[in-house]
Image (tube, rainbow, N blue to C red; front, side, top):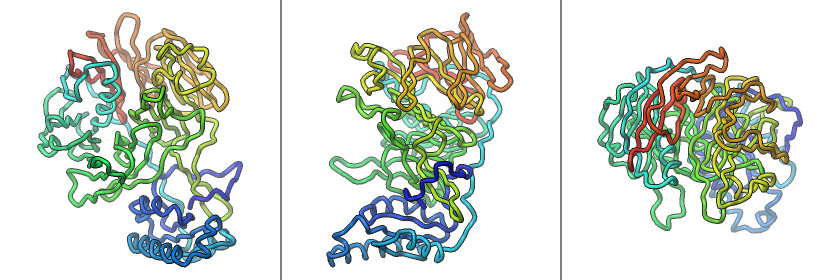
Length: 484
């Protein structure tokens, strides 16, 4: 049940959850029926659902018989599509009284199941350089799309595998050899998101020209998977495959994968100025690249082309209020912060960064989430890096300044002079001054030498769910990657 009428300043938060409880009451306005239809696959995971329509801000509904009939038909259609509706009511008076009646009808239930922390797999041995087809690499503007496709195509199983859509192959990144052929993968019209095991993937059916309805996603490789309308192109999933992220620019769409189906759930929260830019200089779209969620869902990094947003885990959390549990969007939180690098895009002076406007954001920050509150996040300073904390804007590092570790109160708790390339959970990939890559364990502070730099790199991405990373280099117009 999501309701703005409960505003406990110090809520008792429940453990993070992406699933609904067995008994659920949803409060909505009649004008939000399209949003409720989008949530049908997720709402169907509950055993009993009650619907309360708040009609207090819809005065025409009280006097217009035709609108009343439309509302009645829409509610009946919604109830029929769900099959687990036990209560439907509309109210023009006290919404609290209507909620109490709905709660009595659906009954009590335990809080929703918590997110089970992701266990990391063992570190794989470094592999060879592999040429993969992730699209043509003709200009620097192609790199963000290549990284988005790369992160979405990585999957964990017996080995670390990449699904290459262009050739319909699953490639073992530890050996460089194809591990399986998927002819149907090569027929996909758009990029896919690999699911754990490398034998199935989330597929998007693109919208036709001038078609203003949501696109449709389904899971290939699993029999009986139902297509689901979604907004935004899928771009990745959690290491265990339970959460699927999507979206194109400025906002991340969250979906839950359950019962062989992608079920749209919610969207990231917006709060200016510490939120993702939408469009720079009127023509540069801020496309989403990937999302990193802490193994226990206590923190989240959403990474886009021009900025990086740190948030306190899931965008919707449950908290207790008297005898009920209420779902609440998490927007105002001390952990929330926006980061970006100043690159002098279009010769905008760095002094304008204090305004945190969209045009000063030259590139996403080099960042990773840490394993706990004392090591909440790590920032690499391969360019001048800025942080936005509410109304506070500050430069936290300059180009060539190594890296810094911050706690959940945004205080520096560690520092190093090496260049940081990427990180996930307790592991960070560093490059030493003599060109050797090291894996730093943030908990034990141990460093493990991996490989020496043997070609010019353009980027590096983490392999979520493992201590490994992928080096990314350009070879002509193609992409070369190496697992380390």
